[in-house]
Image (cartoon, one colour):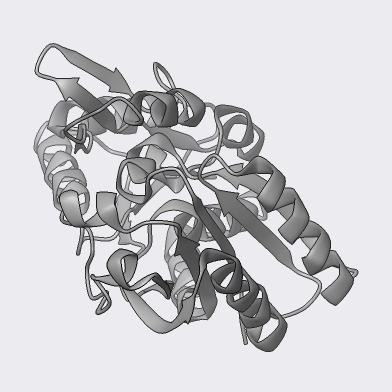
Length: 284
C-alpha cells in the first residue's frame, strides 16, 4: 500500500491527518532565533493569531530540513503493509520544500533505502493542498499505485478551486507573499481583492469595495464554478462565526454539499493575518 506524506501547511488538523492515515511533516515557525515551534505540534492557529497581535515583525517560517524528510520517509516505510511512499509537497514556487524532499530521497537511495518514493509538486498550499491530500489518501486506500495516484492528481489539480478574501494585505506585503496581487494599495483604497491560488501562486481576479462584499463574491464563485455535492473546505483566520455563516449559505445553494470548516494554519496565517475567509472545492 502507498503511504501518503505531505507538509503540515496542508492545514489539516492532527486528528484529520490521523483519520486519513497520512503523515504531515511539521514546518517551523520562529518568533526569534531562540523561539521556534513545530507547526500543529507546538503551536496551533488560535495561538498564532493571538501572538501576531503583539508582533512588530512577522515570525519567520521554514520547511522541514533534509534530515527531517529522511526520518519521515524511513518511519513511513516501516509501517506494516507499506510498499511505496508518495509525498505531496507544497508549491515549489513558494518554497524549497519540494527540492529538499527530492534531495532526501536521493541520499536515502545512496544509503540503500529500498522503498520507492515519489515526490509530487502539488502547486498548492493550505486547503488546496488538503483537497489533493484527501484524494491521494482515498486512492491509496483503494490500493492504487503511486504512479496511478499521481495520474489522478494531475487530472484533479486543474479543477481545484481555492478562492479567498482578506481583511488586510498588510502581512502579505510584509512577508513578501503578495505574489501576483495587483491591488497592493487595496487597504488604502478601501477595496478588497478577490484572491485565487492557482498554478502555484496567489493572484487577484477582481476587486470589490469592502470585506463583506468580498465574502459575497467568494460565495458566488462557488455557485458559479463548483461541482455540486462534493467536499468543500470553508477556511478562516480567526473568524469562526463568519465561517459558520458562510457554510450555511453554501448549504442553501447546494444541499448535498459536505463541508469541513477549518482554520488557516499557523504557517500560512502569518501572511494572511487574522481576518481571512475562503473556500477550497472541486470546480468544473
